[in-house]
Amino acid sequence: MSRECMITQKKRMVGNNRSHAMNATKRTFELNLQDTSVYSEVLKRKIKIRASAAGLRTLDHKGGIDAFVTNTAKTKLHPKLRPVKAEIEKKLEEKAT
Image (tube, rainbow, N blue to C red; front, side):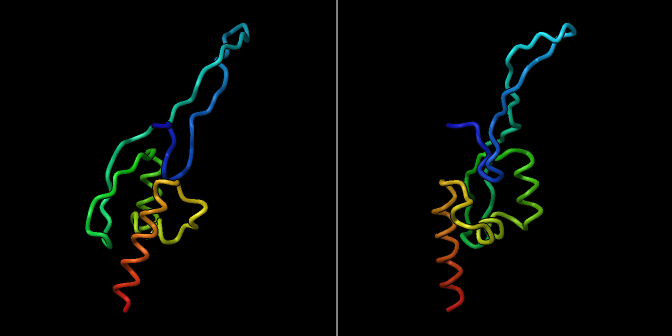
């Protein structure tokens, strides 16, 4: 399991710790990743995602997982969310007809 946000696509960053004498030692800047599940109104079930705290706020801002996935291009979505997008679009198409 990679340490990557499925919503924002952010990953860990690498940098330096700097001492008072300006000595540099490598360090990593980790994400605040949360394993959570979000409810899809269209599919009427929960979807497991691994998102950062900022990614969860993005979902709230966009109006939920359904709105986020449908309004995001397939190429810009995390590979694990692409089948969810297809499933949601299929369900919405069925409702429209």
